[in-house]
Length: 353
DNA sequence: TACACGTGGGA
DNA sequence: TTCCCAAGTGT
Image (cartoon, rainbow, N blue to C red; front, side, top):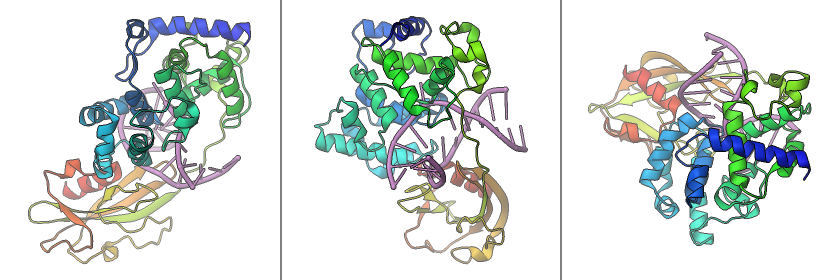
């Protein structure tokens, strides 16, 4: 470790002591000085929820999960169905399925306690390079190189790294490894992330307030906004389909469970056609999974990560028993608690408006 | 390596 | 409106 990276760590930790964010899953440096320790379960739960997800979106889900399942043994005792219902709306649903699998594995193979090394953590479902390092550093004071999107941005600017992501990740990780101090590695990681979230932002970074502004190569030589270098984005294709909202005399809505793999795996849905990239796909009422007096209720648009979906929505009042194998009627009082992804809530809202 | 995998908020 | 993106992982 060279002198300048050691100085960076001290500078950053001093900044963090004053300017850290207060977050529900976090133990502040002040509280840590009083002897409070982070709960590995809470660190893990928050890290999984925060993957590709904003702090603001996570907060209510974190509070709800912690209230329902305060410990990992209680989460392991829950059903996957209940976990998916609680996760509904947060997105990337494989995280929720892996969360449950991870809890099961820790109860079964680790005596109900989180392993403390990055290697062991990485073997758990849903825990990759970043999360393993984050848990090891934050919960267990391990000297682990934590690299997330914030830290990639901070480090690539500080060193004016011209290699595009993700190829630059190896170099960034080596730099972070050298910068990470033996003392307070968890606070150091969180400090780097807070710096990225609060000052070293993707657009219009607040360089005047940055504790690294006299050392930042991007600021000195060009424009910090140009870093990190990323590959060009691909255009989003459009897929089309139809959604069929069947309503019984009590106002219940017919739902079914999606397959256990692929998009929205294991989540609930109203019956739909396939979602096709073809413009001439069958998306009218004749494509419904059963015949009924389908009424057109307009269309909805929903943007997924890799395609845009346009669904024509149809509604029918149906009196008979569930006309589909393994589908069920969800009464008005229960619909909010179903494992419905946002796209399906939109379709239902369009149908019953 | 490249792609699948959600969502909502801000500019 | 459109675009960007926010504490990544699995395959």
